[in-house]
Amino acid sequence: MRKENQTVVSEFFFQGFSSFHEHKLTLFVIFLSLYILTLAGNVIIVTIISTDRHLHTPMYFFLSMLSISETMYTLVIVPQMLSSLMRQSQTISLAGCATQMFFFITLAINNCFLLTAMGYDRYVAICKPLRYTVIMNKKMCAQLAGGACSIGLLVAIIQISSVFRLPFCDKEVAHYFCDILPVMKLSCADTSVHDTVNFIISSLVIVLPMGLVFISYILIISTILKIASTKGQKKAFATCASHLTVVIVHYGCASIAYLKPKSDSTKGQDQLISVTYTIFTPLLNPVVYTLRNKEVKDALHRAICKKPLV
Image 1 (cartoon, rainbow, N blue to C red):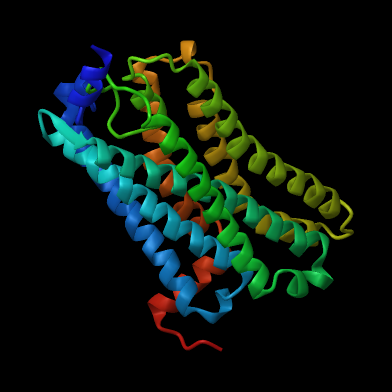
Image 2: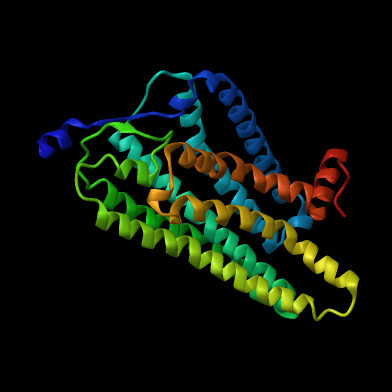
């Protein structure tokens, strides 16, 4: 019977937001508005950084890479989610599900390690300012960005190979996109080993970069506190505030989503957490870096006013 079921299941059905049926139109309008803001904000950041030579520095190179990655990340998930809100039943083939999961994992992990690269950049800028241009050269920046993407690709291949070797006996995904845990729940095989492997991998790709970022900030803060002038301390803290805000929210949501015990979650809670890291977190990046970063605001002002670059 299991073998037969495995061959029969050729597509999945998303439950989506079935428990919020009466509010689907409202949710569609809200999510679509946030999605448009996210796309617009990230496109603006990438455009400003690429056209304003004042921002042609390692810090803004990584910011533009993060914005591009966040844009692609939302493109993988949000259109599917919006479609599920407007249809009675939303289906996806096994191949389509595997593809969506592959890009979701790749881009999510890429974002985690790009934030780590940005933390390292801030560490070098504040703790080793005299050697900053030597250490953070174009080759180093390309290697860090390429390494972040390579880790994401490698982990995605491992995860996809593991999940889609399972026999599936159920078609109904209790989610609005093909995330790892909801898809694994559809298997009629024992997934305890897969659950353990998934938890270990999730721990490594969340805890490791998060730990590196916070070690960087411990060193940064200890260096800043040694600065004699209060003005100098405020300036140094200001260069890190935007990045630290994004880091805390990003890693916080990822930790809650993938490191919490399975018994502590319900479908509603899982969807709320998922909405946070697929809708609100990508929007946080352009909002924080636009509203809190003086250099980006100045570049935006120059672009709007069409002032010549000097």
